[in-house]
Length: 144
Image (cartoon, rainbow, N blue to C red; front, side, top):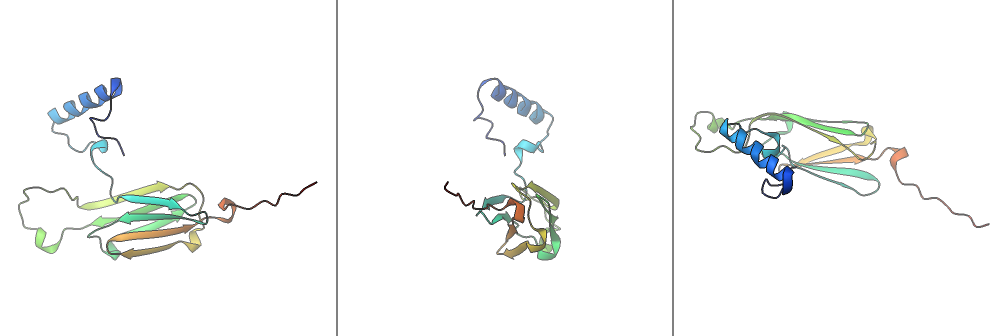
């Protein structure tokens, strides 16, 4: 994710602020560095597996799919409007609706046949066991 526009200093910060000003003048609000990606992710590794948590509030289980191939994880789906939201005039709408795709390159290959995914309270947790070749192996050191 890009840092806040005021955090950048020097020539790159100046360029960034000038680009933001230019885009604002044309009414462009969808610049990729201005919007957080959906779903937000946390990724960690415990040595045996890589874990990915994805925030999916308001997304039903049947509205998304998870794929693992080699060292890539893909979460794709659709966030739908609630039934009571279809005929309203929004004053402000910050939660986006529609299709989403989040692709993540993992630090190693995973065993796709052993991947497990659980959705609980709007948080998807995916456990991706590392492929045998990617797991750390203890090497016995012999003395001469």
